[in-house]
Length: 351
Ligand SMILES: *[C@@H]1O[C@H](CO)[C@@H](O)[C@H](O)[C@H]1NC(C)=O
Ligand SMILES: *[C@@H]1O[C@H](CO)[C@@H](O)[C@H](O)[C@H]1NC(C)=O
Ligand SMILES: *[C@@H]1O[C@H](CO)[C@@H](O)[C@H](O)[C@H]1NC(C)=O
Ligand SMILES: *[C@@H]1O[C@H](CO)[C@@H](O)[C@H](O)[C@H]1NC(C)=O
Ligand SMILES: *[C@@H]1O[C@H](CO)[C@@H](O)[C@H](O)[C@H]1NC(C)=O
Ligand SMILES: *[C@@H]1O[C@H](CO)[C@@H](O)[C@H](O)[C@H]1NC(C)=O
Image (cartoon, rainbow, N blue to C red; front, side, top):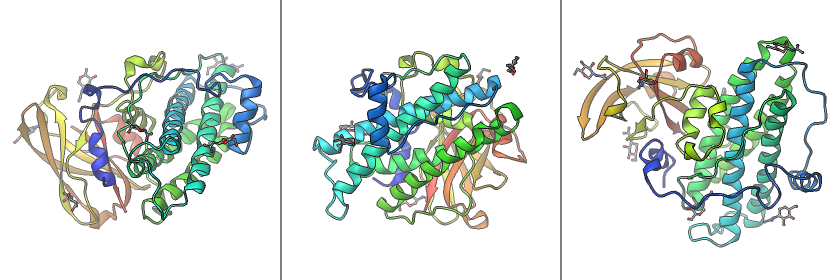
């Protein structure tokens, strides 16, 4: 399946389909509450340790939400890579490693990733606990829209690129208050770490590892909205602690290519509150969001919006986050576009 095709699963009724069996916690290695011995094992597998430096003096309540989102996301990633490792090593249909991929190497890499994502999650939950907030608990129902090794690597490359954009938002909010600015270095270290993974997944997909000169910016709200397509929120014990807006799902019907074209985006008509004309917003690289008008038509219970995708004028390579808004902009930043939008994001990745 082509990366773009896979993303049609976003917001397109996954929640209505049958859920896999619930995941039970703790995992075999004790996650998310390992004993000291189990933690030492995880650190061995991760090739490194949790930080032992002194945390910053204080934190804003908004930045506690950043740690909650990071924990929610890193737990999701832990579960994903843990399942992927099992699928590969248990010989699940579709997970045979192609001859031109080095299987021992790939298993070694994913095995390290499982433990490294656990340490990322434990760090975020540890910060929450340090400041007297409840840690984020794992959901029990995750539904990853993949059933082959190629799809799994493609999905990993996609959510990792969203994470790389979102941690930019997190680092900016941490930097705005001096008492917590000490967290910025640790976040930067994770951005690099996830970037190393991203480059590797892209190479497996036949792409060059270095996607763009400046990776696309995302926001915490957009990441939180995307993640909720892949969990049953009712199975997440304290998802309500994450005080970030969730946008209405948007489905991209025809993923764009490296050329100017018209794209079609669909929304469940019942989720449209008003008949005001909507514009499409494209967030790409470090540029101000591009805003274009849409036309619309109704198909069954969906409203389909058509919008020009001006690939050539803006070199819209790599990750593009697509929103719908009744505002005409212009928007100074991804944050401004997010604040003005209630629908999205759909995701396109070109090259
Ligand atoms: C993962 O790493 C751990 C620690 O090095 C090792 O014990 C385990 O066998 C590895 N698992 C796989 C599937 O390679
Ligand atoms: C930490 O910040 C909160 C609000 O941002 C404030 O109420 C509290 O007094 C601060 N605590 C310390 C120890 O500075
Ligand atoms: C593992 O394989 C099962 C069965 O094909 C599939 O439903 C699931 O999405 C796969 N998970 C991952 C992470 O590849
Ligand atoms: C991009 O190319 C694919 C494969 O040829 C096609 O299915 C898709 O509709 C194209 N996208 C657009 C926006 O034309
Ligand atoms: C749909 O298109 C009509 C014009 O054909 C326009 O009046 C209306 O505002 C549009 N609705 C949305 C939600 O964009
Ligand atoms: C519709 O209105 C509700 C309640 O005001 C709001 O939460 C939701 O985001 C709106 N949906 C859209 C697509 O604007």
